[in-house]
Length: 211
Ligand SMILES: N[C@@H](CCC(=O)N[C@@H](CS)C(=O)NCC(=O)O)C(=O)O
Image 1 (cartoon, rainbow, N blue to C red):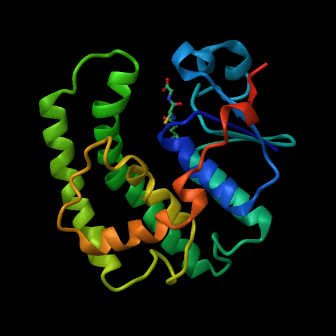
Image 2 (image 1 turned 180 degrees about the horizontal axis):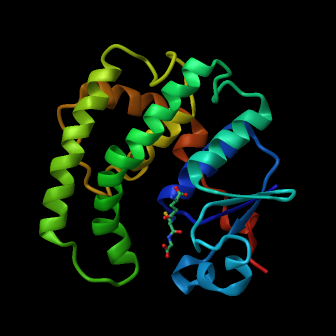
């Protein structure tokens, strides 16, 4: 298997799960800053021109959530539960995360990190204020759930935890408004205790480059 990634928001999910599971993947670093993801060799693999991408035999799988589930199912890991009712619960959190929590977390990550990284100018104050407002709204929902649960689904670590926690990987740099969410903070500490979550990306020297 080959996992195409960059050290950015969505690939974090796939890299963290691959590392946690010790999945037999060869890492291929895609140089986003130089537009490697928009060049024909990469577009031939992923017409979206986005990372991450997993190539497993004839399967070319894009979407970080799907990649996490594929790696966990392939490893027979309970990061992806086998009971249909629990799978529905995981899907609930993955959908919620895409539409709400990580959507606004990613907006703050974009405003405070990516714009600076790509020389796109200062953060847009109105965009930051709106993202902060919605981030807090959905962080309160997450905090309420975590008040009664150690992990998001079935009280055990799973792909939902890896997905929903993605913005927290850059909590300080993205200036996430996390004050007052004590249960979320406790969950964040549990995740930080996992080496694969804390340090999900392979060293550049250990990764191949796109041919
Ligand atoms: N829905 C996709 C989103 C992938 C995505 O937006 N990746 C970003 C990096 S975090 C990317 O490749 N950006 C490059 C670009 O859009 O030019 C997923 O969840 O994997």
